Amino acid sequence: MTDCKNAATHFVDRHVSEGRGDKLAFREADGKQRDITYAQLADQTARAAAAFRKVGINREERVALLVLDQQEMPVLFWGALKAGVIPIPLNTLLAASVYDVILRDSRAVALFVSESLYPVVAPALQDNPFLREVIIIADDAPQGAITYDAFMQGAEPAQTVETSEDEIAFWLYSSGSTGQPKGVKHVHGSLCATADTYGAHVLGIREDDVVYSVAKLFFAYGLGNGMTFPMSVGATAILFSGRPTPDVAAEIMDIHKPTIFCGVPTLYAAMVHYWEDGKALPDTKLRTCISAGEALPEEIGKKWFARWGVDILDGVGSTEMLHIFLSNRPGDVIYGTSGLPVPGYDVRLVDEDGADVGPGGVGELLVSGPSAADGYWNNRGKSRSTFEGHWTRTGDKYERTETGRFIYCGRTDDMFKVSGIWVSPFEVEQALIAYPAVLEAAVVAWRDEEGLEKPKAFVVLKPGHGESELDELKEFVKQKIGKWKYPRWVEVVKDLPKTATGKIQRFKLREGA
Ligand code: 3SK
Image 1 (cartoon, protein in one colour):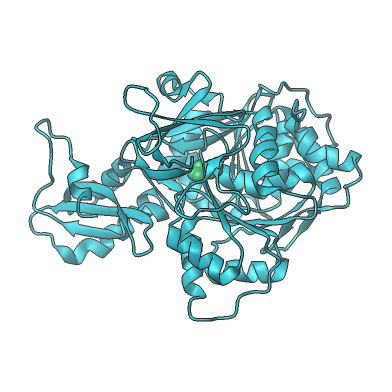
Image 2 (tube, rainbow, N blue to C red):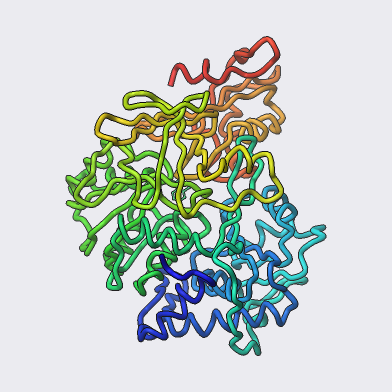
């Protein structure tokens, strides 16, 4: 296994000492369209490490990165690791109230923020007792913040601190079943472990690859695809800060010629539709496509292959395991399944009593492997029930076929994913009932015409209110909790099915799905 004592040495500096300093590490596909080589990255990350110290940010303190997919993201992430500071990449699609919770929970001492995201997070910065610095990636800083250039100004390259492979390197926030975000702590060694397993054995990533991941770097799936896997071999990654619609993704493929494309089922479905009418495909050099976040519908995988002539390797991962641990492989794809365990990982299916479930049965998926998180921050109960010795509980229900393939069956609780990101029905319900016309609400996963899950709400309205307010209600929820979480359908009902103790019986609402 790779020496990962300080992961930054392996992923960044090694390329310079091994003669790949002039190789392009990142190319921006938008904005100022900047390039950065491995040598420039090594230099800038060493300066960023010094800049952390210069502004008084110490080893083991946390810094939040609310940063779009742009060059500053890898510079700050690896610069922090070099200084022993713990970066926390944040989902860029959240609402101020959620940033407030995360910033307080993590006690981040600094926030780095892309210019366009500052107005969203600003309300959460007002009374935060932990933040000492706000650094904005912009030409000018609002009051109380400094610019990124001012942060870097005068910082001479610093030595990388020596860490242990088992030392916490970074956190990611994952939403729990109550919608309460949980800080997932990952160690240096896990970054090398995912590159040595999925990166090497499933992707077969090489130095001459060009990777384009529509999943952003703040997401565990995107962090591996768009940063650590290409950097594990000195390959190039394309960064795009905007929303990846089918036409935009196609343009990026046409111009930048990625050899590896990392998508999510919603985008693959949209792309399949976009080219269904015979429109010319972009001229690409694709050799592999991958998918994760939610199960890829069989139809979409087959249609994609028929049109593009390249398979999609569908896989399953989690923020807790850092990347994919169950996947289809090149030359061995069965659409509608999540494939086989990735080399380096073991999986088991267990029933409610913890007994192993054999072929044909359905059980909860447990996984064991070298990239499991160290635990959740300040949440011992949840850490103990999720990380059981070497096994990590996924909360996903699976069936194993006679041939050893795994087929996704749903969640053990009511959580579901939209565009690869967890949605808690509870959180959406709270947002719905915050709207003045709504008396009660229940939310379930509902399949759209592509077979992908989206939130559907059942609402009981207060007297005097009617259907004409439903569009405004959707917009209200979108603004309150995030763009992807709003209910795509809202059905008005007289009352909600409940148990004798008043718990909503969501399964009864789902029966019509
Ligand atoms: O959801 C997934 O499938 C996934 C895959 C890789 C890394 C992280 C996640 C959540």
